[in-house]
Amino acid sequence: MLILESRCESQQVKLCSCDCRRRRWRWLVQTKWFERWGWFYRPVSLAGVVILVLALAFCFQVFLAVDTRSHSVSDTLYGIFPYFVSVAFLVDWLAGKTSG
Image 1 (cartoon, rainbow, N blue to C red):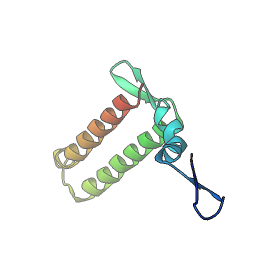
Image 2: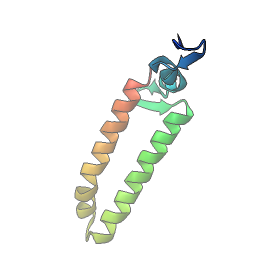
Image 3: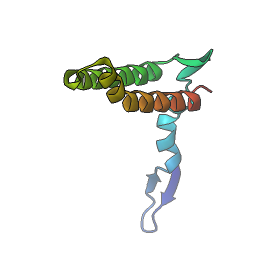
């Protein structure tokens, strides 16, 4: 916290530096979200569970959208593949960065 005194009066003005804004979110960033579990990561905090649930919900929505317009199993697999792989890589990267 930086304290400045004005020239005309003896009032002290407190200016918030960037550190106090960073301190608010530091607990979330320093918390382990995922833990290595064999080849995979498992969530160990609420943030990890939320990320995993959002990823699974997105994949489920993509599956439903693609499956309604496909005529065979291979059509469905070709349609969902890019989305599922992208989400899997994104969750794996995020879990690797937040596993501590």
